[in-house]
Image (tube, rainbow, N blue to C red):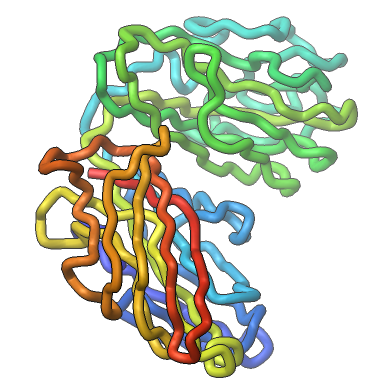
Length: 368
């Protein structure tokens, strides 16, 4: 179920002892031969930011073309920001103003010799030539960046800034991160107004390798946002890193793409093919406006299909649906009213051709 408005996903199937053979597929289902076969998923360059999920399945879920090795059939989702047209609301995002415009639970120093401190410099090695590599900044390669020796205390605020926001607007919070010492890479998390958002993100153990991380946040009734980068690493060794090019801006759109990966060696034997998307966009543009289980070979009927909001209220229900029956798809509305973007919980009772019944449960993201 492609949830992109303008882009197609192209897939590289890598086989024969890592010798790549190219399989371009303008479709949303990909077959591989055996569990563990590596696949490179690619959406192309030119987007502002990427995040593939489930995050732990990919070698790097924050790039345009990560590699995944599926051990079982599954659905992978890409959330991406195609471009940025609004202003970056962060003051001193690239640290060109030095130690200005932000706060920290850590102390500012000219030399880093203890934990729980930070400096601003053109090279991490200038702050500690023994333990830190000579990593350049992300912005230009010769500008300043934030260099940190993290403490082993969870939830300490490494960097914070307070920004005025508009009610009920979507924002993206982005930052670039690299290790300056390979031991015990940083584990960090975004937070806004004291609440963590998104998953913990980790620096690569490869030093001087910049990676972008981002999360999306809705202001709801807030008119001010204290945005922070928070430490989640409690190991006292290492945890030495640099950050650069922070961004916080109002979003025009977030796009989603999904791909179903099937493993022939498994699905050919099971003959019970049910695949349920984890995101859809009911904006009535004729593309991916509805949500329903996709019932393939070996499925007789969708006996019941229910969707609930986060409070447990039933917002959609159908019974005795033939495979892929249009009338059994949810269009994101309840009593004629479009529901807001959020995660919704589904429950689907499926009857297979051999009369076996199965109940599948999960969540789906409704996005506009």
